[in-house]
Length: 304
Image 1: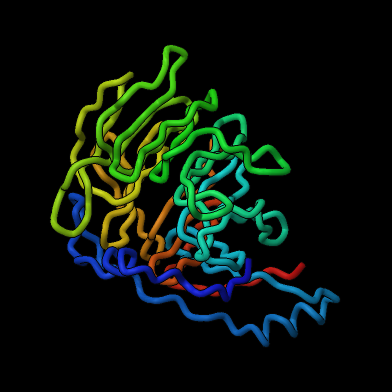
Image 2 (image 1 turned 30 degrees about the vertical axis):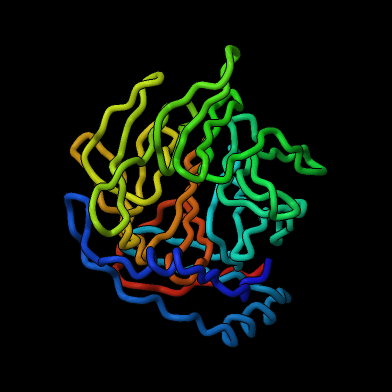
């Protein structure tokens, strides 16, 4: 998938992208300044001097953490248990990063999720764009598992999907049949099975209330968000309508200011963090934590 793919501009997405800049979480943090574009000509010359002819750009906020943008843009992101990333591109098809972005079959998707066993599920319109359902990737083709589902999806460690219909009706298939779980928006399940969801209106900017699940019951926790994910220690991360990212801690919601507004988030079973940047749709990988004692922005590159 090319990094020059045009960003999807459906009216619904634009409406969310230009939503109020008001924070919906307890702590407000001013946005960081825009990152500069690296001097690619200088980078390439230095790579060639060392007999290396390609380079990747790293965007580093030395006060916080570095990020790597491997090219490509997307709308939704999911992380394989080993840390590899798969996205729904701006053309609504599925791409996996393996050295380069590779198209995964030929299917149109609305959401995607991995189980702890590495099995990839999507909800969407299928290959024809005319029939909805849940599909899973066999390694060579998309197998159609369920019909009539075009909303959000999350998968338990055992590989059992929770899914929503277009109206938010949420279902989970059990050995005794389908279990209805009310109306929900985004769904997220951690690597040990802890589930969170968004539901109902939190404010006028598109944020929804946040719920923590125990079995088939949910309990509301403070805050509002548009997207939610669960990390490898069962803590929820959320993105609000203004594009700000937060992680739940014992003391409340902690701001994660990574020098960018965020559209979507994916976290793998080993804690690998991937983000989709708001407005641009660029996909970023959070590298290992680094602090060299300096502050401010630094543009880095790596030859290979």
